[in-house]
Length: 389
Image 1 (cartoon, rainbow, N blue to C red):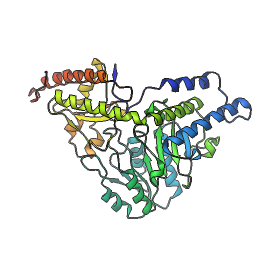
Image 2: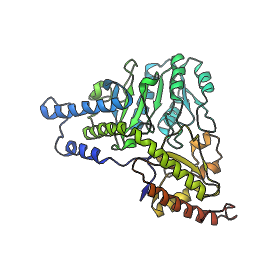
Image 3: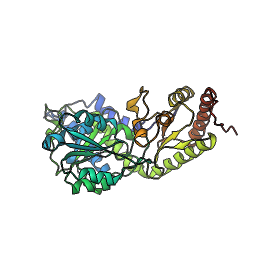
């Protein structure tokens, strides 16, 4: 199997799995307990919190452990709305992950008005529109994804946060896809909250974190036992938290290696375009994650291509893994101005530091064969020649 779907999830690093095992088997004490068995778990959580905070340049007390990116995003939204109930406008880009887009859509029409900031054809936010939409000074919450999960395009988070700060508006960023691939620091801009998820950087699934700036007022989403310093009730997932801490520490050390991943991604992209006529990249090719490419295959049904590639042993995605099974064209690509036909003919490939040059060569061959089969089956024959040399 060749795994080129690392934006969906990543392989758990062996060091992460090894570090988690004792907390699944032997050290099972409740961290809220007052005896030593529980205190050991509480200490492990504190050490992991320090590692996660260090990855984004935060203070440990600004980190709240959650079940993942979706909970972190939803918590940030509800906290802001409950903190400033008099403000009724919401703002986000048109290329947000569904974990931001869907809850904001839910609140839209329930007393709130959601405004979506358009992006340009390259997937980058229109900052002039952002400034205009924030000018009304009645916005309770605004959010901008740090790096898009489908195209890898990196948003102008620093400038957008500065504009929001000048307007006195709570600024949140979904950094789930960016962390571990590019440097991310909460010190670079006036960011109130930031969402992250361990399984996107070779940690375990089911564990994430929410950064809340120490000066930001906060209201919890979950109530009960008062864990996480009264900010997120529920017995802590100690093994998952320990795993996230180890993964964060390793991710910080691997950031330089992402340059090699970018080189491999560019090589893959170039070979696919050389092998298959008409292939184009969706999104900006400069400001994007080093591991991601979203490719348009003219005359090819994307779902059919995924089926053939799966049979051949290549894992890739039509876009967000959270929309698996959907026959609808990508909302993200349509927001960039792509036609429904182009969106349906596009596939995302995302590599990691574990990807190898020989996998790139094999993947290109698999894609060439699959595209050839699909284009031959079209009534017109596809109208595009496959290079077989």
